[in-house]
Image 1 (cartoon, rainbow, N blue to C red):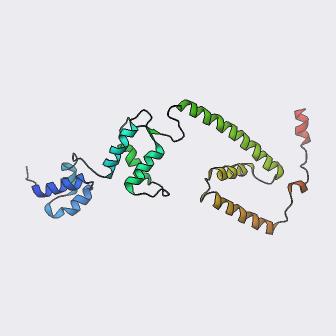
Image 2 (cartoon, helix red, strand yellow):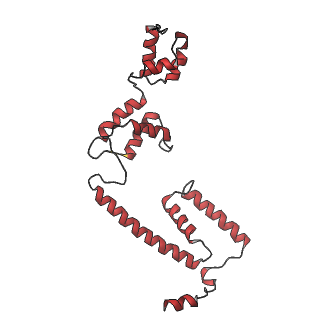
Image 3 (cartoon, rainbow, N blue to C red):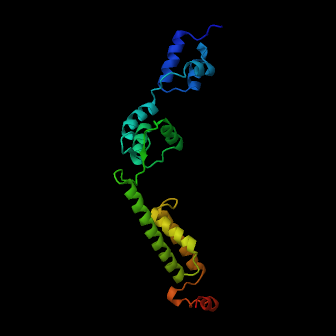
Length: 213
């Protein structure tokens, strides 16, 4: 068996670099003059304990996540932001989120922020009931808008109201309001406007009315 060209000093440096979180490619490039290759790193450094940002982050999260109530998603995100220096207004890169979640032990529970840990089922039922009431009311409001302004698309009226309510429009409610305002300004110039009260009544569908009697 051929003797390894990697000296004990180079091996020690490679182990130290790996323990601090360096990747195999980085170690091989840094120590290439001492015989360290990518394949050598895979063979010899796979069991080295890595004490990087991920390691210390998991060490912080795990004791909280294994509690009966788990750790709230917003709390988890605060730990991740602090560990990686991500500003509160900036999104957490998906790769970091996936890497952290994969590293968490199986008994860590990341609790949805909508859930009251002591009343999980009651929270779910209340949200489902509230959503049903909200959707019924939204349908009523959409019908009201389309009755006043029959030229409007019911689907888009509903969609726009939801986006204004949730702030889901790209750029937020302020940008959505500005876009709506500009669109209205252009249409006012292009076409004479009438109020709902000036609109002629809709023709009655007598055939449908007869079927309903």
